[in-house]
Length: 342
Image 1 (tube, rainbow, N blue to C red):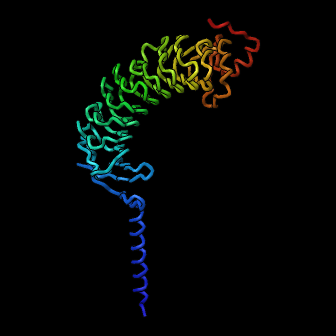
Image 2 (tube, rainbow, N blue to C red):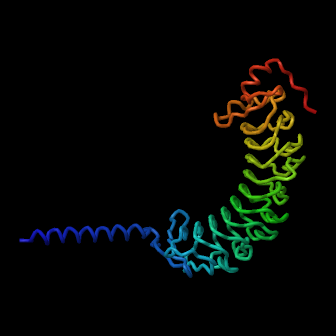
Image 3 (cartoon, rainbow, N blue to C red):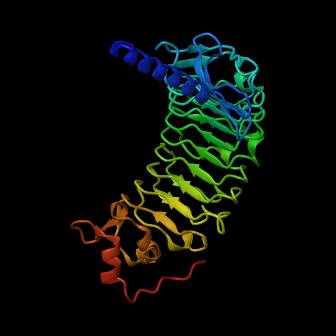
């Protein structure tokens, strides 16, 4: 007879064997024969390589200090060991700078994630071989400039995220190679003094976020978006805007459906500035020092799209406490006839 102790030992061993088998199956794609699991891609690069059957290539995760808790520092040559890598992440990994030829062994890379590191200089030379990248994330680093030519070879780039840096300058031709490919740019939470000239020729751009920058002079000039005919969403929240030229949105008449100019220094909004934006359904204007007047009555078109926390307010000309613009318009402007637009 089997002793009770041996019986439990056999059960324990059976569980261990079953666990090992299940783990082995979890890292092996049966149909492709490709292995997923820990992978060493170079100095201090102890990553996780996942074979993605749907694309027949590898996704590599080196994020979150996966190398024994030590930051990467200088990112040297990344060696994928013969794997065809389409996506790689170094998010939150202590990267300070990148070796010139770091990505030469990954010419088919589709997505590069360098978010939340300490990179101070844009790694232009390291990107020269990445001609097929469509998604690039360098958000929350310490970049002060995107220089001319930095992205020249990324002619397929669609999505660029550079929010949360210290950007003061974007070279005039920084995005020249992406004039017909870039669809989304996020440069929020930087120190840009205005809308960079580099963005003005991006005819395929659909989403632009420049919120929380310090524009100076604090106005939107005429024709600033004239060539961005595909733009659907524009966020200029908290950019110190004082006024908007009546011709500022020329070129966006049939495309833009969402504009945010909340938390600025606007005292009024001219109806004719927005009248021709036929696709516009959402306009958030809260937290501006508006002066109450029936010239704001045209905003009634957007009242239904304002959530409670987005209710715009104005201060009566005679003084006193601020009131909701919705309340002021309903109480004072029922017979108001706006002047014709020029």
